[in-house]
Image (cartoon, rainbow, N blue to C red; front, top):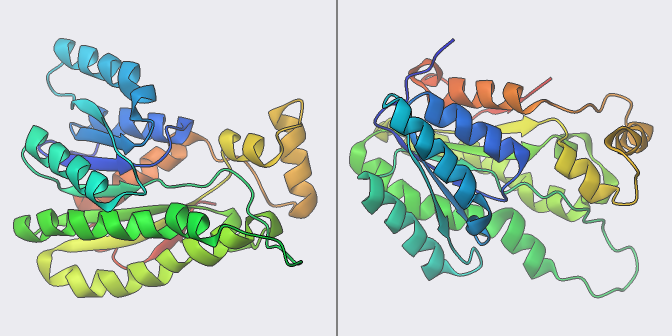
Length: 255
């Protein structure tokens, strides 16, 4: 099934993972122009160049650029979003892929924990970017905001305690914000993903293989499984397209 996203500019914010790469390919294949924003956006430069080379052979494909930004700095993030808007004319969609692939267990003893860092990575950057991007979406009276979450947050994995405390706050936030901006034809949703290879390797760095890491995770919850990037992309395409107009303020989970 094809989803028409032509003349849509999409900002994708977060680490340059296999999930993000597959998502960018799917979005540009359906005509969207994609701006990847991250503090290490240079890692995506060759990838974006390849997408733009494909467009040279098929002008129905979208374009892609990467913009570096200090995600901990409000002004730097605002400048990056402004650059995205000026490059492609505006911003129509925000996909927040600030997925944490490293454990953040709660400290049961009186250890020093950098709560500000966890807060910044898992929640503050997402809220700040949303605020900046909404100014463009409200002006166009249309748009989409989609937050991607690790499904481990829904399952209560002890290794993700701090990330759960902060990232899961987006579920309630999306429900409230969706109502607040509905009058502007903007939807706000959350999508919980299954496990990615980056997540498993980040949580079990000493594992000799993905299979071994997955078995360790299944020891915590037998229902855990890896979700292929294609499934993530197809679901995101549905939510961002006209087919997803009626879905707002929801938290969806990939089985």
